Image (cartoon, rainbow, N blue to C red; front, top):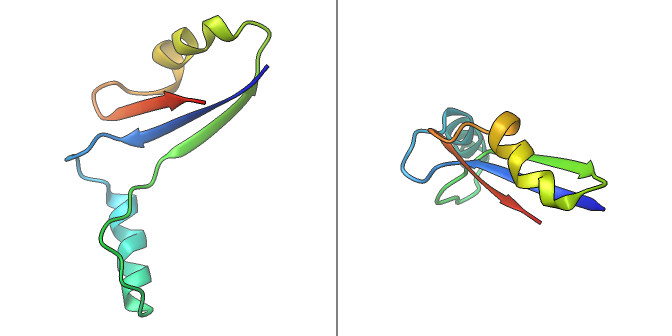
Length: 70
């Protein structure tokens, strides 16, 4: 089964990469309220019931990130 894991910085925490992207967009005339940069991990797994365990053990940092599995 194919799954996607979306990992983003927690709301309220500084996102330096998102801030840099926002500045570049605004410098080029785009109006942007906020940019948050995260990551997408796509996996083809045999047992989807193990995905949350994999993410929580190895793929994200619970102190600064949140995740969603699709």
